[in-house]
Image (cartoon, rainbow, N blue to C red; front, top):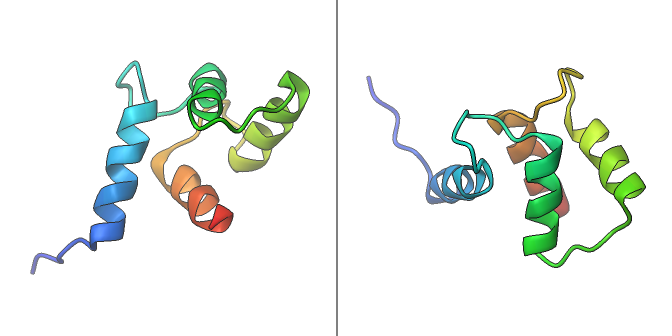
Length: 76
């Protein structure tokens, strides 16, 4: 049985893909910094690194879709 995706889920996937500039299915710290700049969420590099570390729940140096979605929805 297929589940229908919610419009919000589709928007999150599109947003994630927009910022996953190298298309590897993950957002690295450089892509995250560019994302924040694109969204005009200017912050010092140290703060970006701390925020990235908080989002990167498994501490692998990359943010996967679920980590991104959890963070993004928490910002609303």
